[in-house]
Length: 272
Image (cartoon, rainbow, N blue to C red):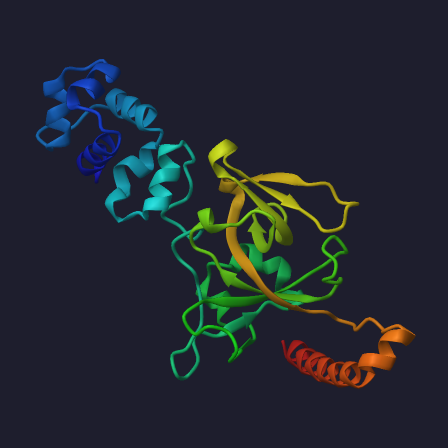
């Protein structure tokens, strides 16, 4: 139980005196002081008033040590955006490492895409995903590769793969940039994001294909956010005649390399 610590922390962050808060709750200052000091425990009616006053649900007010919560998340709580601070949305990521204890880049195959929505936080699910390393990526960050379906995000084509960097602090989302987002209802989606947490507690998800309309998603419905790093398309667009005259040899080399990557990916997927 962290009630006394939490209400003291929240009051001080708001720069309110005990007398101010007690007056807002309709109780005496001495009663409120006894709750903060742990001399007495409030009844359920007062706990509900504290929950309403600090805009925090009762479970978190009682069971979560708010002093351990990141500043960015505390700020969101104080704005009324009661996010899941104890589960997997922001604080815990199931991951795997190689024999040298370096972070793997797990690959979510198309076959596992639907299961990822429920298995993303399950170490048993994550550890059976194919994993590899990309030496050109930072060793100090966490990456994962996701399958992309549909034609809403050209130039990434249907059947392509996008690698993202795990984003723990969603306030770091930059407007107009691409991200892989895991949502409760839609699963894995690749979209351009606009951060509207402070305005209404949502992200606006947009496509690069103008045929698809933007739509908002509440932060409570989001499970993970991954910042776009790079992508692999399932096919290579044929260059025009003028392009071939200038860069034909280079394009042919790239075509061969992408063909090799596709073969490796297919071999891994066939083994799953």
